[in-house]
Image (cartoon, rainbow, N blue to C red; front, side, top):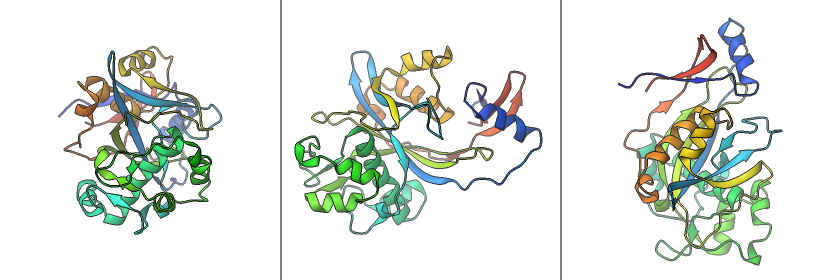
Length: 277
């Protein structure tokens, strides 16, 4: 077993004070975790595997000014039986994720929907073997906004366009739960996918001030120097991407997918969360 890891909270805006209050005995009602999916979109670059990341705007209630992967909360309609699907079936995903088939479909569909909403990459095509659609021509204008506003569901978009979700192009990498003391909590599945060669990741979302391809080791150096803010799950995932010999090598299902929930602790340097590996 690996030694526990500690992640200081003093640099995370607002969380350090909350953590100290909790550690010193103050209690409040624990927030119910919201189910969410996030996607590590990777490609091969000149300096190794790169990942597309967003720096959230400072006004966000959750993770302000943090570097994050595209993602967000599930839409219950992501579990609709009418959602066109190709690749491993929800039953197979359910066995891998340890949940019901409807929940598994919801998490996978949410991942596909969120990466489309936030960065314009759509893992869907006319069939299980046809090239993926290119969602940047004029006919797609406004579709992402209507998904964000929930005027449309992913199933409605795919049915209208004659497309199927390609579940074979996405893999499960990790499962994290926000610590109990935080006012906003997420039960999040982390997925990964290789960037489609003919599509463009644009990051046109109001939630981000910066959207860019990142060299993982550069970002980790910025984090270590205190010039970049990352939550613990993001740090661990970026480290794994940095160690990957290629994008394709990284986009493999993780053999072990335990639910990881950091534990809040007090250290000589201040409050931190501990991850027991």
